Length: 134
Picture 1 (cartoon, rainbow, N blue to C red):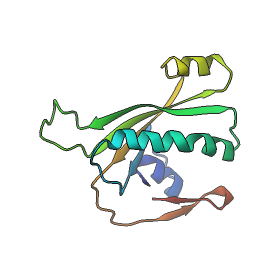
Picture 2 (picture 1 turned 90 degrees about the vertical axis):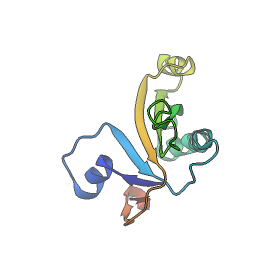
Picture 3 (picture 1 turned 135 degrees about the vertical axis):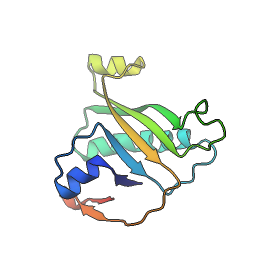
């Protein structure tokens, strides 16, 4: 997956632009049940990522995955994107209980686009010698 959009502008170029979601594009094929596949991959990666980043007391999971565009709007379209809501809560708190009950105490919206041509790929170095593909 590759970062794009407003968050990329802030990280790479110190842009003052405000953004409400994280925009990604992927080389994954959008066929089959890609929504469930992406959710499984993310949910498997979240605990390790939280622990590695020093947030062992944080529970993170995919709350919802919706294909875009909506079939009622474009009935013949094969969806070129997924809209995800990623929820988090502090472990052993009322937030975690709410998360387990299907509520979203804290959420981040993520849009993942498919079938986009990657014109330019940039590698950003983050703290801890981590790399981010943009």
